[in-house]
Image (cartoon, rainbow, N blue to C red):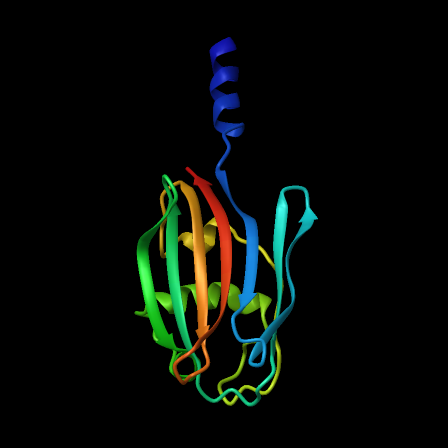
Length: 173
């Protein structure tokens, strides 16, 4: 009987791990094109951390924007890991492709944002209370570790105008 209780305790009390945001940093290289009035993490509940980002475009409408999406893994510093993708953002919004890796990350953040229409884009972008869950990484499984996701935006001509760094930790069994 004693062993049966221990076995039940091991199966019931087993932790499934977590995926959580640890830091968020937004930087604008061209203050005449884009600004970040809000870029912070907010504690939503016990162990639940949400990201809030407000991207204010100063040159509207946005008809063309390139986005570079890179994932880094922390080993002895942050090293490029698995993804380094550049996409034409307006084209991705107009013609989503399920075979592209950018599609999975875009659909994961879509419920928390107002990115629900294609270009020309005439409004600010809001991401509110964006939390990470382990089911977001079901299609793109990542091993346990600390990661940095960078999203660099181009004004459509030549200049990289801003960068958003999202730091997160994955510890899923």
